[in-house]
Length: 119
Length: 107
Image 1 (spheres, each protein chain N blue to C red):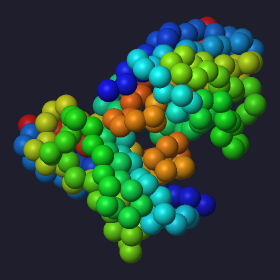
Image 2: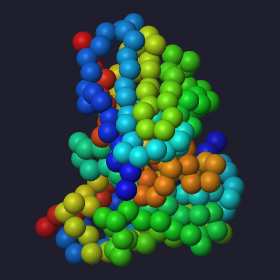
Image 3: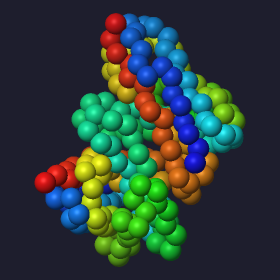
């Protein structure tokens, strides 16, 4: 069974940093592109970042470019999102998800982890 | 960036009704479109990929159609478990973008 379990969400002050993790099992992690998607409370979905299976190719939404870094450790079957210079508008549930067929078709998703940026 | 516009933003319907949700891309995306269902407090789930391919395990009352810029998600006979929010997403090019969502509510 494919499982994705996020962790690391917390309350952090504006300007602070946080690292999210997503531990996966049930599939060949190193062969799959992975993504982060976020959802502010009561709002819609926003794609944040994607990374190739080997980790050599990454993409970011403009809203997080230069502040967030996606990475992965294929030996640990874990995906990461390092978030720096956090802003109020980064408050959201952050989901990790596996991409099928290259960069496409997000399935399945983790249960999400809540990041709250507030003073 | 490719903008995805969903309509309506909400719809009230009864069990057994046929429900259609539309999604329009600001430029052509071929069939690079997915549909997701999200229930309150839960993660989204993939329903349809490549515009019209049904994800394994999804009931056949769900169907998708369209290509280019105009797409539809149809629920042929609404069931109680279908009351949720639905999102379209384009995967034609980065940045990947979602529609604003359509909430299907009980009438």
